[in-house]
Image 1: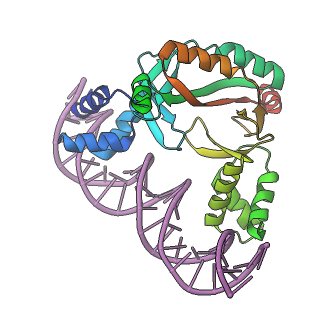
Image 2: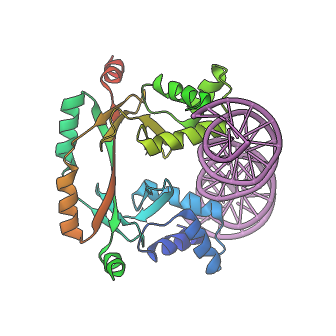
Image 3: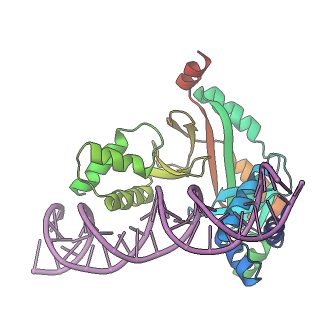
Length: 128
Length: 128
DNA sequence: GTTTTTGCAAACCATTTGCAGGGTC
DNA sequence: GACCCTGCAAATGGTTTGCAAAAAC
């Protein structure tokens, strides 16, 4: 645990939705933390390995990251407007995977499920 | 419909799994089709718009494309070894989405579901 | 004191764009 | 002939890497 890593971890903790590396770089610069871009990338990679953060792909094709509330297997639901994200556990994917294996003969190894939509407050803001 | 587009479409048709743009560029060069990289990108974008091809993200984070057998809503299952892919329809995601909306209050707009595993022939090759 | 991490800058690689020439209808 | 498409090459933007100095253990 080094100072830079702690700094990056704090930047992530202070965000409550999906973010891109560029966001962290901007945050770091704004708060004058002096953390280099490369270090941010390296720390993210580390955190992904630990399961504290997950990488996901926005519909736009952009790579983002989200902080995970749990290290158990789960998926994410991200607001397409404010990026706020929630973890989703127990989506019943096991049954789907089994069914897919039966149908196709493939042996499914991993799956990616990402949901996108409007969070409650952005719905309210939109309908107003 | 132009010559270059037809050429790209044929390159795609002659592949039976997920591929990257670099693959098409290599194919085009190998077959001396003289199709520029930029044109390949532009044609792919076009085909994605038509629903003939879909963009997906491999577990590695790399962007790939797959040819779609149907233009109806569906998902993909890709072999992590040979990239061979199959379309999956009717995965029962509607029920999951409804449940997620109930639980979270989000209004789900779109979802991405991608499955990865070993296709039957790669399983056979591996176990040998 | 040895090992790991950092910052910096340069290198990389995928993707996009501007533009003049060529193809399509 | 008007308009769209293509090739080329240069620009872009995100991500990675090499390396010497600095921090960690």
